[in-house]
Structure formats: structure tokens, C-alpha cells
Image 1 (cartoon, rainbow, N blue to C red):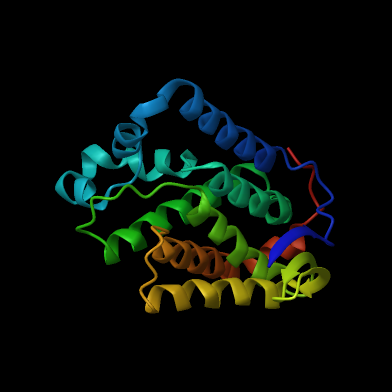
Image 2: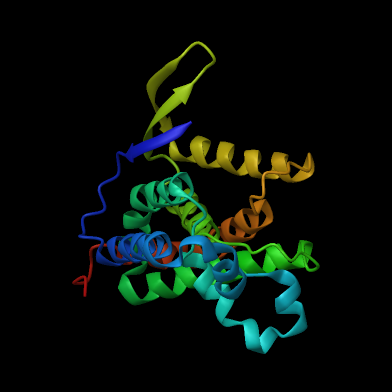
Length: 222
């Protein structure tokens, strides 16, 4: 099930979301053009490696944040940026610029810490924006559960377009992450990070829900 767009106009020009997408793409282009065959060393340095963090938390704290802008391939970054593009503008509209930036990085950092909690001896670099974007999904579920998500669905007989309520789309996505964790799926994807980021976004936005919804469009968007 691939989301194509939501039927929930944000009412703003989501400059922060666009900037995050642009920065991720710029870093990915840098990886391709300038890192070349040294990708593994680059990931070990700037990705989040639980074992290295365990040995030197203060010295490796930067990797919690730099890892959010690294991606392992075209489909990795394309999927993440698609989700950020579709869901990010509405959350940016709710939080406004600065608080949205803080929210995004808090979700990403929480995702890394949950991943660390369950994989503290791993020497595999965790990379990607999906932890932070999972927080955006959790926030969207709280604020706009009945918004419609136009999606491309594969049934086994082919693909078709359908409109799905955000609550069902996001809950399906979340259950799928949990399912893959508990069957021990070995794809190299940090599913615990997705779960950690999702719950962070869900909880933070649940606490702030009334304030966020009441002030939407009430103030100039600076």
C-alpha cells in the first residue's frame, strides 16, 4: 500500500518540510557523488551504531542526529521523502515552524534510543529519516484520523487506487511494523526505531492536541 497524497490541505507553504526533504536529498547526492566506495566507513562514522554509542555516548551523540539524513539507496530515500511530503505539511501547520523542527528531531532521537534499547550490542549503522517520520505519522493519527489518504494498493491481482481514512492507513502501517519485529524479520530495517518514533509523536501530540488544533490558522505563519 503506497500513499500518493492526502485530501487534507494544510493551508500553508510547508517550508520546513520542504527544507528537510531538500536537505535529505542533498546529503544523498553527496553520498553518491563524493563518498563512492567509502559508504561503509561513512555510515560507521555518521550513522547511529548502537555498540559505538554504548562505548562512548557523549562522543557519539552527534550520530543520533546525523543518521537521520543518511540513506542506503534510492528506494530508501524515495519512500521516506514521499511519506514526509504527504504527512509533514499538516503537522508543520499544527506545530508551526520552530516547534515542528524540535518535534521532528525529538521523534528521531527517541526512535534512535528505542532502537538502541533493543539492539545495544549491534555494530550495524542505523540510518534514515524513518524514525522521525514515524513520529509525524503518530502525530497525524492524533490530529487528523478521518482525513483521506489516496493510496495505491496491491491485491495480488494487480494495483488499484483507493481512498483510505488516515487512521486505518497509519494503524495498518504500525501493525505491520510490530508484526515484522515479532517474527524477527531480517531485512536490516530498524523496526524498533519506527515504533519508538511513532509512539513519541503519538504521545507528544496527544498531550498538546487541544492546543495545536485550537491555534491552527489563528496566527501568522512565521
